[in-house]
Image (cartoon, rainbow, N blue to C red; front, side):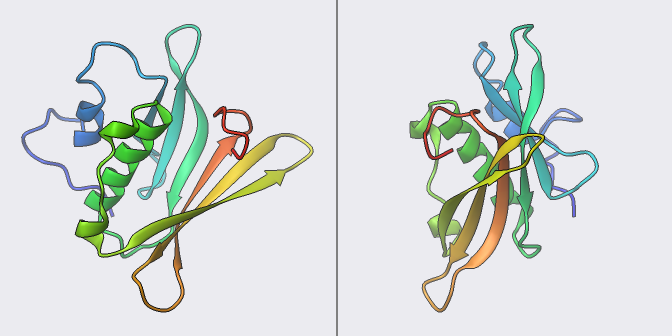
Amino acid sequence: MEIARSQNYEAGHTPMDLAFSRKSEKRPFICRQDPGHARTFLILRLDAEGGYGPVGRYKVLDKTEDPMITEKKMINLMAIVNGHKDEATALGNLTGQRLLFNVVSETTDAESKTKIIFRTHDGSGVSRENAILTLEKGVFHDDRV
């Protein structure tokens, strides 16, 4: 399933792209939809040469999630990791659910990664896995990530 795009945007640009290009400075982190996977986003970090390189991946596990909700979640995630938590918007009124997360470290011989599992809870029963964010270790300065 592809993210719905408004006809008001230039070809190849999503509302997410435009939301973060409003300011002239380059943000330290951006995201792009993974071209090979419709419900997966690459997390990219600004490098010393002014380009962006992949440092993580956000994969939506809940196939019933509205793509526009996923896009809003990604906008919020990018606002938070770029130090603009005040730009994040509450989504509970749109989804009727709470978004929970659990930081799980995963280490292999070749590289060290951090995995964050997002879960949704509608107030009844058990929460359900919603998405997985996998990041290179040390991408963020939070000791838990």
